[in-house]
Image 1 (cartoon, rainbow over the protein chains, first blue to last red):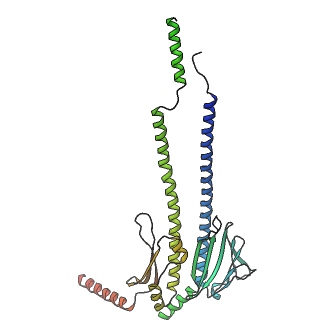
Image 2 (spheres, chains in turn orange, blue):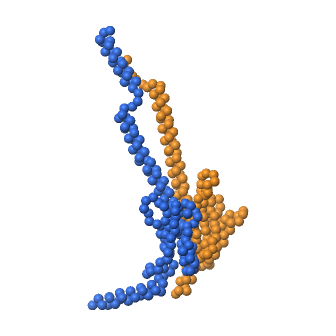
Image 3 (cartoon, each protein chain N blue to C red):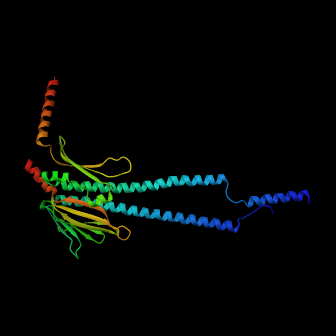
Amino acid sequence: MSKFRGFTLIELLATMAVASVLLTLSAGIIHRTMRFQSAAREELDAQRTAAQLAQQFRADGHQAKGLRVTDQDGRPPSVVFSLPSERGHDVTYTVTDQTMLREQRLDDARVRREQYGFRAGYHVTFAKLQQPQRAVLIVFRDLPGKGTRPREVLHVEVEVGRLLRLAAVQESSS
Amino acid sequence: MSAEFRTNRQQVIQNRSRLLRRGFMTTEVVVAASLLITITSVVVPLAMQSKQLWQDSGRYRLALGELSNQLERLTGLEEADRETALAGLSVSPEVSRRLPNAELRGKTIEDRDGKRIVLQIDWDRPGPAEPLTLTAWTGPPGASVTDKLDEERVDFGTRDEEEGP
């Protein structure tokens, strides 16, 4: 019999070893790609939510006449924008678990609620700055790794009462 | 030893030597290497580019937020305080930590378009890139500019009358 058929055991072993190495490598790459895609989607969702929250926060801050920030122990941090009577009732932003809640009482005693949800690892803080009076909203995200500082996802500073100030300027000039 | 037996023996030796060949032909090596190089040269730059794009868009967003916050502060100040604040502009610590060599510039412009603050932020980016600019209007054109505009309007009016039938 002059024709050789099949493979030797060594050839098979070598092929299997190479194939398993290639499979392991490609599985790792696919896994990393999927994780990256998931992280990117999560980041995009957070950015979209943050953009919408920033827009609403700015609008409320600009038409407010006053600001109250509470960040005491045991109570969830919150911001209350006092609105002039012609613009409706006060607006409250409260931070609960992974959620930012915006509440405004309507004239017929109903309460309008909007929720801005963030995934685990996101934190929201408020602050108050002076000259001019500004409300500050900061959204942080925890980064993997011990001792790594959380990263700011959103930082919005809003001048409180801007619309009232501009209206006063317009009135005095006319 | 017969001639037929010798021929068979040579054939067996040739077959065995072909089967026992170790290594690869040059063509096989060249094809495999060129395939690997092609795939690597496509995939690696793509991965690098997407990472760079991701980083750039994050930095752009951060810079835009910084300009927006700075303008919010500046436009709320009194005229005199605003000029002092413009002279001492600096980026916030978070932005200076995340944007390489971030530099913030600002100036007040007053012309026929009105009085406004123009803020620019620039940072180290690969390749040529324009600084990011945001403008906030703080008022209508001042008295001197308005007078100049009125004079221009009169001039236009006179010319129209002269050119008319």
